[in-house]
Length: 99
Image (tube, rainbow, N blue to C red; front, side, top):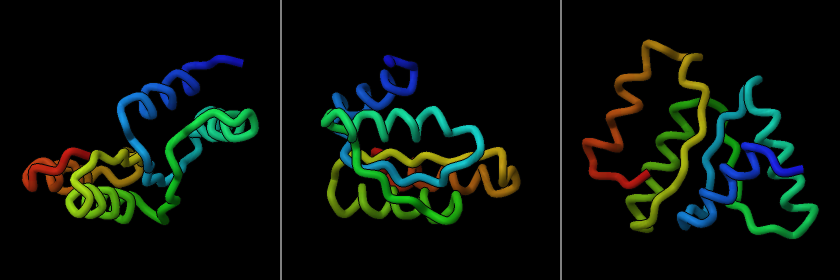
């Protein structure tokens, strides 16, 4: 089945995103299903690095992008930690990170 999540993963792949640093939450089942379906049918999708919390996901994506010079995708539930959001969201921007 072609869903919005399938289209989103295709867009990431077409944009050259090879890795997703993810802190999965209760609002991500459709994305997880789209990843599983893509792998089952042999479609290329970014590799997923599961992270235990939002700051780990952002820091890993940020560091990986700085070292590799290539964009990475950080996937988090930001509303789970509203007080940390400003620092987490601006850290890569201030560093010139393409993630």
